[in-house]
Every structure is written in structure tokens, then in C-alpha cells.
Image (cartoon, rainbow, N blue to C red):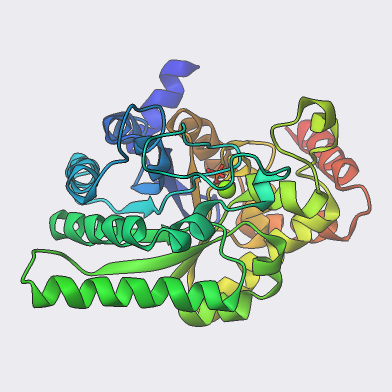
Length: 330
Ligand code: PEP
Ligand code: MG
């Protein structure tokens, strides 16, 4: 079976009725890129840059160190797109205490709701600028997309885009080699999903972070074992936010990807296709199984299935019924 999945590597993910689906990889370090290619990824949908910042002694990585890391990932992908997310420090991805860097979120009661991700970046403008510069410079070597985590407010969008614009002007003025980038927003806070038109106006693409979207929609700490049984990706409210985001982005002609755990979980492949999703980003190891699922599915039929799932008070019963009928049919 492993062998057979491996042979799927060079096969494109197309449904039986011809819908093409893009399968991308999530990585944490440039060294993960070759493995992503080996599993058949068509690009990097999420490079979690915070891992360059974590588990290290001394100072945080400067522009040069980040540039080298991003460039290495871009070169390793041989021209395939690499989506670099600006740091998502805080909450489940804490920084060690370090000299010269006061970490204001350290003792807060609710770090997941505190100074994390873009909130942290905007509070550390020099760090943010250095990272954006490094990303622009890496784009001189291949297709690069910049992705911003945890955006919630219109003023965060404006402030982030202003920094990105200013950095680009600086690089041009200084004649520093760089490339054009697409800029996208993570949709991982319910407020973002509920104000999607604002995001679609300002960004080239959106990427749905289901891990946090579930956490914030259900008020369940994603890392708290005591409430793990309540962390439910099938909750109708979660599915509604995901379906609406995909539909609105498709309608606006903007790229939309799912890069949370759901994208790599074969329990959700059909329903996400049915919602209209055509771009998935996941741990490289999940790619073959998801691809196999897609190769056996019919997008047209899954639309009706996804509609039933969305209308149900208990979506799992719809899923179980679908599995039973497909087993009977086989
Ligand atoms: C997510 O929240 O779904 C996501 C992809 O980001 P992370 O897991 O890094 O928070
Ligand atoms: Mg997240």
C-alpha cells in the first residue's frame, strides 16, 4: 500500500470528473523542502517561519539569516511556489526568554488571545521589517508568497500592507535584488471569516487556518487536553465559516487554500472538495493519501454531499451515511 501511494507522486490530483486540485506542503524549516518535493507537493502552502525563531540561544534571526533560510527553501523547490508566513510567535509557539527582548505575552492568562502572530510583529516593527525584507529578497530566486497570520482588524491589514509597501520601496531605492511577491492573509479568527470581503479586497489570496479557526470559534484551547474532546472540526459553525470563506474567495476569483490539519485529514477531503476547495496544504506525509482520495472522487457529486453536511445539525451522521452507501455501492 505504501509503495502504491508512493507511485502516485508524479500523478496530478484530478477528480474523476476533471476538477484539478493543488496539493501543497506545510514545512517548518528549509530542510523540510526536499521531503515535501519527494511526497509530490506542488509547492509550499505554509512555511511556518517561527521555527527559525524558536529553540535557539541568543538573539533572534536577523534579516540575513532569514534571507538565507527562505532562499534555501525557494531554491530547493525548483521554481515551485513557496508561501512564507510571517512569524506566528506566542500562544502555542512561545519564544524562550532572551536578553534584550521583553516578551510581553509571557505571563498573560490567555496567550492565545494575547500578543501573538501579526499583533506581535506590529509591536516589533524592526523585526517585522527585517522579515519582510528577507522574504522580498528570497523572491529574487523563485515564486514567493507572503502570508500574514491572525489578522482580525481592518487597521492591522492597513498597517501590515503599509510596512510591506514601504519595504519594497526601500529595496528599490537601495537597488537590493528582490522579486515580486503575492500577499495573502490567514483566515483563522472567526472575525476574519465573517468580514471576508474586506480581506478579499486587500489581499491576493487567503489561507484558512482551521487549527486556530476551530479553537477560536468553539472557545476550546487547541493545546488543552482537558477539553480536547470538545475540539470538534465537524461543528456546524466551523464548517459554515470554512464553506463561506471558500465560496466567497472563489466568487471573487481570489486564491483560497486550507492549511490547517483538516487539509491533511482524509475524513475531510470530500467535504472540502464539495465546498469548492481546489488547494490544500498539509504535512508532506499526508499528501499521497489525500491525493488517492481525490482521484476516486467526483466533484459534482460532492457538492450535493457538502450541501447536506452543511444543513445537518449533526454532520457526522451525514458522513457516516455517505460512507455506508459508498461501501454498499462498491
Ligand atoms: C492553523 O491555525 O490552522 C494553522 C495552519 O496555523 P498554526 O497551526 O501554525 O497556528
Ligand atoms: Mg494558526
